[in-house]
Image (cartoon, rainbow, N blue to C red; front, top):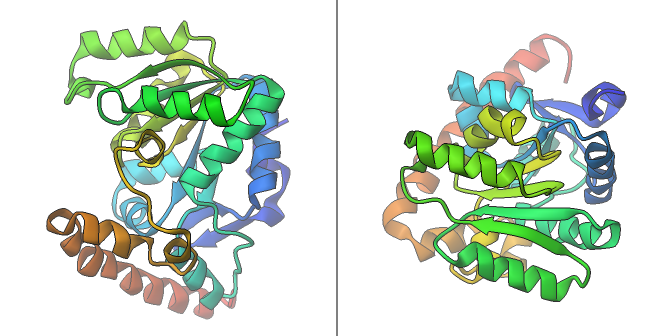
Length: 263
């Protein structure tokens, strides 16, 4: 039995040349159960505008996303553009919300989890909160790697051994993109945890080091505004200049699809 894109092609859509799994959160949880039981290491990633641009413009990021077990939609602008392309997406699945649902399911199924990333001590606080909120959940380890760890062979080997010996069924990685995506892609076969997730700031949110946008902002596609106001120096250019390139790629893709008769 293969991965989901081989099982049900009706739930796969082409968005600007990016393969998306058009699934509800419940369908994702059910497929994760299959992945945990299968025990073949795999990667699950979410896509927002930043990620979409990276996949379009960077061949290695495209390779990673093409080979991911699942690519879920984590961004209202992606939902809107897919609708304009007449390829409606059934549900926006935000990374932090998905992580909570996965942990709730893990508590029920007795899956063991590991949290990797965020600042020093943050992952440990996130684990404490998760275990308190979901009785029965077992977090078998947390670790916040030092800056530049990916260039340190000794540190990398230490992390891989830590993960491999943890007995975890699921690994949540919060290092920012593309670092977290690359780390999982290049090392999941070494540490042999069945399912690894690129979770961005989800561990920071749970550990209390970063404040998440209010639900009403997230529901209306304004999570980017909340994040920008928290860190304007770093994010104003990204959101108001760099991310605008997505509309150029959208326009080009739509013309191609119309010409090919797929819209």
